[in-house]
Length: 101
Image (tube, rainbow, N blue to C red; front, side):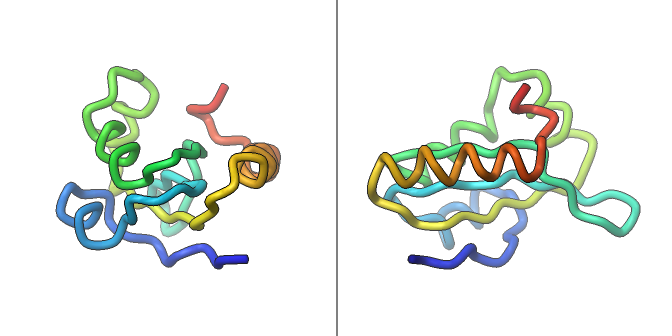
């Protein structure tokens, strides 16, 4: 199985550079008090498109994090839907992200 990428600053330019147009699970992370916190976990058949959608999200929780903190993204490439479902659920249980409630 693939490995999680390193954290990339969550910008349009970095999505263009680093996010593939393939399926996977991703984490949105913010930095505060010298620690990183996962605030959202999601999945998509096209990581690049989905990550760009979040930059203009109408979701108040995601927008607040993007405006208040330095944010990052990381992902793992997974093509099979069943595997994405399983990993997304596991990640939500592990990190309990505030914007997934």
